[in-house]
Length: 161
Image 1 (tube, rainbow, N blue to C red):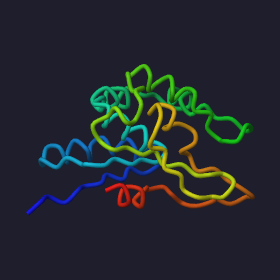
Image 2: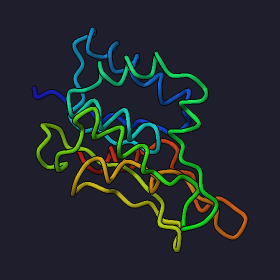
Image 3: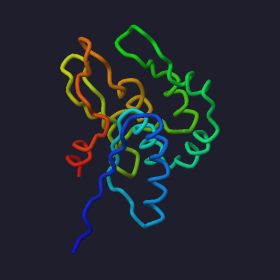
Image 4: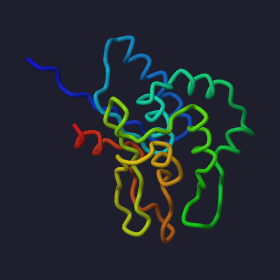
């Protein structure tokens, strides 16, 4: 009997996102290794670090963060098509050496985003991983309401495996 494929869907929300690190470590201790990794927002950051083999470095960084550093990483902006600019996140991922094309990593990975025009889910599965992860994955408001709630990208994980 073959082992079922395991998809890991990592959701948004900063506190929950950082807790994903502990969940991945607990899965590893139990001998469970996901075959597919999908993430939205902070979940995409954690997922990218995991598939790149840089989860310990991300954990060290997360444990040392101050509120001021968190605010700086958010790169908040009020114009230009998004709430979060994302340049700080891209720079941070590059600093951790998480910058290869997604296809080079050993596990299928998708950063899940929202198309601001249609409100539909987009799966970013190609190109440089550090460019798929940042601001495009933060839910944005359109016409005064959230376009959709993709806070946990379960459909992407299910469909990819």
